[in-house]
Image 1 (cartoon, rainbow, N blue to C red):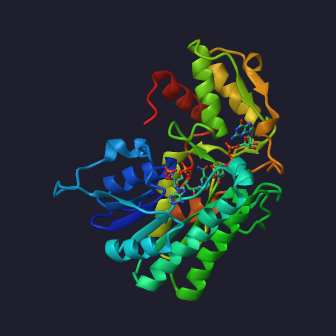
Image 2 (image 1 turned 60 degrees about the horizontal axis):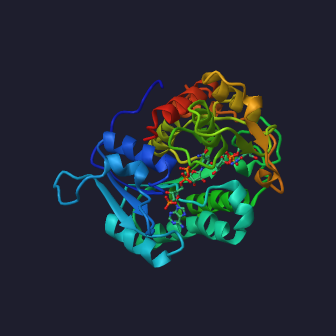
Length: 334
Ligand code: NDP
Ligand code: GDR
């Protein structure tokens, strides 16, 4: 990465979705820059903080800079209380029901958390009157059926309840920028993966399966559409891009992507090749993984981010597959 902006210290950041893939990498990045990091976590009957356990600091320690707060994107009054208490300089809004296939099963819940949850957070910021910068986790899924390459001015055509909820989130963030003068940016991120990716997303599912099959634990893996084309990058690089967006002089929207195009089949081949197996001997078809409406091809054009932010993806899908499989083989995903 070239032209990195200088290190920032002493700022307070709030991350929603801190327990997720991106939230955990972003928390690491911001802590390394000297931020005090506050994270919103959901109360669950089992621990959901596995991805950030290595960052945990006893809050009794006077040097602690990571603070976790219970809350939920469906709970407006809690969001107001937290914004008031934390008074963040930067808010990174990553929390969402983020699974596209699941959004067809739970469209209303997805709209409530992924869509309206964004409004609740923005309203909390406006009502409290805190002077902060806001990052909205927008998605390439908003482009949906619009053919590639996709960039900041490409029309949206979402193909899932998740994609539709993200389009709403995109426009509500823009509306707070234009209507309430909030420094709000949309990061329109194409798929980005890592060993911390949720196990039911296709890259992690395949990497995990290839490792387990190579180790003799499993025999096969069941997948849906192998023809879908995606632009897969490496998550730690993408959270650096999020941070750069909030350090820029002006608030605007950016695509982050690698600009490469591979199918799900290609990714399976990369993973199985890495453990010296033939993917065709182990990948089976299960129609339950198909979606009622599929997004056929997402290939991003990240020119604007490179020009303004000096951001450029370094890790491309063949290497990404090897990183993910190696991590599964070593059984260390964090
Ligand atoms: P994950 O699914 O890994 O993480 C989602 C996070 O949101 C988790 O921390 C989850 O908490 C939290 N969350 C879910 N529902 C709620 C709720 N009702 N209230 C509070 N928190 C909630 O997603 P990623 O890290 O992969 O993605 C981060 C964001 O970026 C998401 O908004 C996603 O839609 C978006 N995005 C992701 C891309 C990708 O390729 N990864 C590409 C483009 C956009 P819990 O741990 O308790 O479930
Ligand atoms: P996506 O990611 O829908 O692009 O959303 P996912 O990994 O779920 O699917 C990618 C493509 O693979 C096909 N596919 C399968 N997908 C899953 N999950 N499981 C399977 O068994 C399977 N077989 C084939 C899918 O049909 C699809 O075409 C991700 C999420 O992180 C979103 O939150 C984010 O906004 C977008 O990326 C950009």
